[in-house]
Figure (cartoon, rainbow, N blue to C red):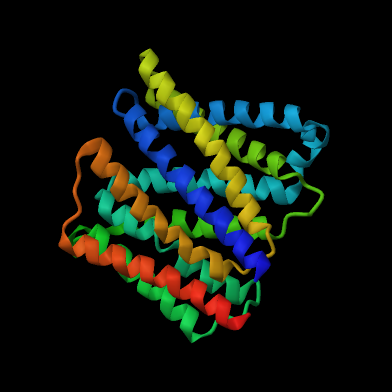
Length: 286
């Protein structure tokens, strides 16, 4: 129970900083190519992680950045980001978001098959109901589903595999080193892709968005790895990723004036109820 609680708190923290990071990178991408924004954000995030390692002394164990499992996780992160981004350019945002938020379902399956977690019908139901809530909020149109949807799903599956790999990282590897390795891998992949598409100069405000976004990204990497290494059950932590849609709606309303309709409000209630039920079941199990 203690491990699960620690993992849930860290997972919720990662969701919060990741969604604010997404809002800032969206603002930055309004004035520069998306791939260039992702590459530059990765470079800034690498810098933040490097400074944190210098401050904590974890730089002394930087050699762990080339540990096979750390490199595998970083490679999966970069591949998942690029593949998902390619699909995002080809399909409606609602469809892509719905596919991406199917990750708790995929992680629950992997938790059973790979991690041998004991997931019973109540938890399966809560995860499934939470995903229904996501669909009510996003309201994707079935007619927009095409072959690129499967590409987006491939990226999401790679992200789920990345999280399972993080669970098996050696205890001696500092979490900051894992975050640093992830940031620099994504930065290199994004910048190389941006060079092929053409580099575009930008203004100071956009650089400010990128710097702030990268700081949140580095924090998100850290919180996510902490959650996955907490010792808690992934099938318990994974559904709390659904909370990102709640923050996304709030930011969309404040920044872009996007108000949810009645169906979306019902979806929010379903998502919150799903999370509260999982917490209730954890108390009952204890």
